[in-house]
Image (tube, rainbow, N blue to C red; front, side, top):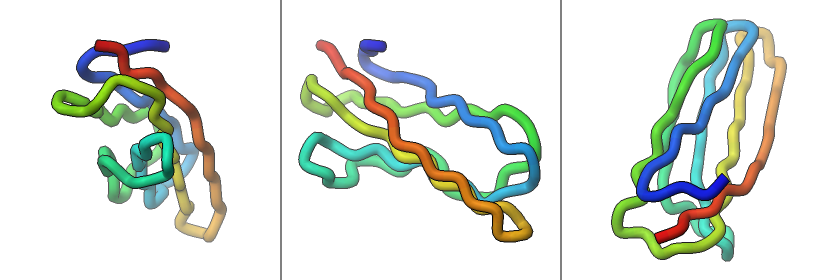
Length: 82
């Protein structure tokens, strides 16, 4: 899903969890941390404003750890087009 200049990353957690959403460029360098904290059960959104970033492929990584140690991790790609 191409975007310009910002996008919303949606994620859901079933129980209270510590969640981080990090954006990486094509070579694996972290370029933004759009969420980092404790989130209650439900659907949440993290907005990434890519103003000033080069067009191209980026990856976002969601890492969640529940209060009882449950873990979830996912990496997806997104395309910034100018």
